[in-house]
Length: 162
Image (cartoon, rainbow, N blue to C red; front, side):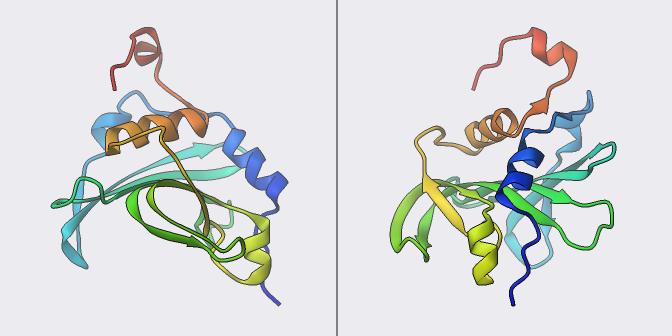
């Protein structure tokens, strides 16, 4: 029997939790080469939320193809057994939603769902096309907004240009 790590209600609650970013979060998001590929880089930042667990913002990008990227919100429960991806903002590539039978090639957002876990597939296998971003920087901004990250005070006072 497949394991359900999070229900849809729990997923929604985790995404909605306020996640305060440290004042130096942008400088801490430094890209590093991946050991498995000289074409990919990754940056990560962990945000602890008291009585909930750790949220990890992960950004992956391809050095050669600016449309090949992922901005991921993951959750690491207090017992730190398994990292659960709650949202994934991807660049352009093919994607198929197996349950729904839909297929597309576009920018898209993956959502953690209970129904995909119940079948035994990845928690964030379901995705929807989006036109809300066209670049990695745009995907980062949308992720921070959608996933309720609280920006440092000085950044909240200044308007952002995407």
